[in-house]
Amino acid sequence: MRCACVGGRMNDMDILFLLIPISLIIMGIAVWVFLWAIRSGQFEDLEGPAHRILMDDDDPRIPRRPKLKGDSE
Image 1 (spheres, one colour):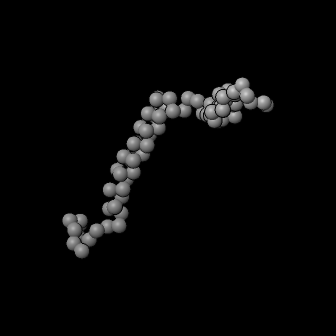
Image 2 (image 1 turned 120 degrees about the vertical axis):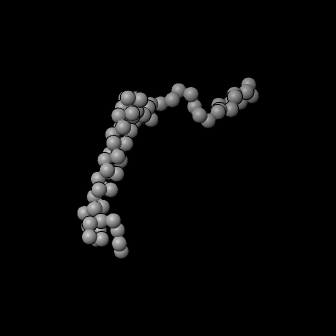
Image 3 (image 1 turned 90 degrees about the vertical axis):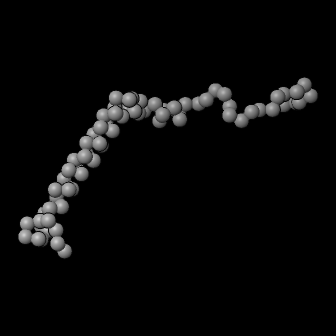
């Protein structure tokens, strides 16, 4: 295998010239997404949904049969 490296051989450490910039780009994107999430309010109310599931709803989800005059309950 021939390449444009010194002496015609590829050094094992040459891959770092590719991997380090790619990892820095991915890390920069992750930091940008995290900062966007903070600024857009994604972390504002972390406990609200957990408490909301415990609260009782006043209106029932299953519709009840209307009571008629002849019903005896």
